[in-house]
Amino acid sequence: MPNMPHSPARAAYIKREISRELDGQKPCTLRQSNTQPGTRDVG
Image (cartoon, rainbow, N blue to C red; front, side):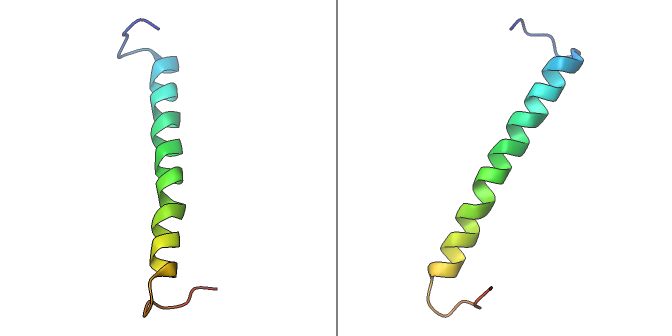
């Protein structure tokens, strides 16, 4: 894909990639905090 910063399709693609990356990080941090002893039990 050519580098077009003002392309709506490219902007949507980047936004989707970022949100997917953030969604991938969230469960990891939650899992880490849940497995550590002494942390509050969530569910």
